[in-house]
Every structure is written in C-alpha cells, then in structure tokens.
Image (cartoon, rainbow, N blue to C red):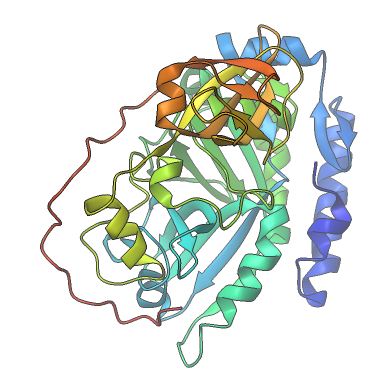
Length: 381
C-alpha cells in the first residue's frame, strides 16, 4: 500500500496542505462507513473474501486514493504529449480516454496510465501514486519553451472505482449517466469514465464524493483497494510499478492490444524501438493472465520454465488475492514458456502457476509498416 507520506512527497509544498485536509476529511468519512485502513489506503470494509465474491458476482465500490491524478494543460499540451506518449494524443477527442505510456529512448515503458482529455487543452493522467513524483519530475525536464503546466492534482479530487458484473445496474440505480467504453460523462462536481473490464472511475471534488458514495453504495458493496486491483488484473490490464519500470516494450505489456500504442502517428520517445519490434523483430514475450495457489507474489518476482532452465523467463507485473482462494496475476512471459505450460514462480522448483484466458485477443504479428506520418510538433525526449 502507498502511505500518505509517500503521496505527500510527490506534491509541491503549496499543494500538500490542501491534499492533507481533503484526504483527512475523506478518510474520516470512509472510516465512519466502516473502512479499515492500511497505510492510509482502504484495506477492507468487511471480510475480504466476501468483498472479492461481490466483485466477481455483483458490484463493488472502492476508494482509489492509491491512484493519483496528474494534469497537463496549456496551448501546447496536445503537441507536447503527442511527442512523448505512445498513443495518438492528437486524435483523442475531448470527453474521451485512452490508454497510453511513456517510454525511455530505448522503447521501455517508464510508466503507463489512463489518459483523459477533459478539455481541448487539458489532459488528466491516472497512474499509481507511487509513480507520479518521478514521472512528473522527468517529464517536466522536456517542457522547455512549450506553453503548458504539469501538476499533481490528486489533492483536488477524490477518485472512486465501481466495478463488477452489475456495476452498470448499480450506477443507474443511483441515477448516474453511464458512459460507454473509454468515454466520459459529467457528474455533479466531476466526471466518470468507463474503462475495460466493466469498471468505472469517478473523479470529483471532495464536497460531492460523500453523496456519490452513499448513493451508489445502496447497490454496490464497499470494498478495499485490493479488490480493485483484482478487477484490474482480471481485465488483463498490467500496471507498471517501481519494480517493473523501464523493463518492457509496450507490446510485451499487451499495450498494442489495449490500443495504447499508435503505429501511424509521428515520432515519440522510444518510437523507433517500438516500431522495430512491431515490424522487424519477432516478439518473444507477452503479458498473460494466471492463477497461483497462495498469497499474491510481489511485483517483479521472476518466473521459470524448463524451456529456459535456470534462467528466468518472465516477471510478475501485478497480483492480487482472488475470490476462490489463491491469487490472480498478470505477468510478462516468454511465449515459449507459455506454450510449454510449466511456469513456476520464484525458482525452477517454485510454486506452479495456471494460465487463464485473457479477456481480449492478442494482435496478429505485422510485417509491413503503415504509411509514415508527419512528425509531431512536441518536443522529443
């Protein structure tokens, strides 16, 4: 879990007091509603297995404080981000969202995130609070004379997730206008966006969050943040963390399957390597969904297969307890090891994992690049 201190350290000093006041009030509200905290994140409201069962069979609502918000705004924001991120930012319409990533010059993902275009010149990034400080600091170094600001705005809003098979029913019962996939809809004091896996994220001013929580909780069971992590994993969405940053090209994380990479836009940081992997190389590693008996393995833990002997063949990206016991996980894994089906965690004789079907198809390998696009106006890292 991410502590309040770790989150506060990512803010400008002027934002820390406001953040502390908002989160103190919001945390007090959650505790009054039965929340049990773990390092300031909500661990649970009731029995964890009952919450997980509700996420599998019905609907849950989770506080998403460990998910931070970064705002990039200004006349040059779109052009700047077009030259930095993997997705086609210029094509993103106001009121819509897309997955995206920021890569190193070697084409490795430094971070990945949900990118929302809330206005013509305003973008919001949702990414782990533990990552936002480093991402903001490094991204700022490339702004130069571009007319834009990059700010951690987590302290100005509350983030709430609603998910599960009956999430739509729960939201409609609360008179919420439910958006379609990767679309946004206005809420009192904020907005709500639909993300893959039957999940919805509401971002709103703290003054409106309590009312939203009480309205939706009549049909969606309050649950801890680990339940939201499980829903994200079951959606097949990998999240880059400090343990896995700068290790994967986007295709290894299935970011192309999730429309988080554009192969038709102009240059961006790491684009040459990403494109070469797509059209000239043979992709040997993908992200797969799996189950293991036992507690969730840590992000960054290595995987092994007899195909590779003592050499690791993959990495756990994210893991969470599952409703039926044991843990589900997403892992970047050598395709040859996946095909052999004898993958183990931690060592060649570690605990075996069982592969599960992904909720989306993986793209067929391409050999011919699309027509070359014009270079973006933004700065390139």
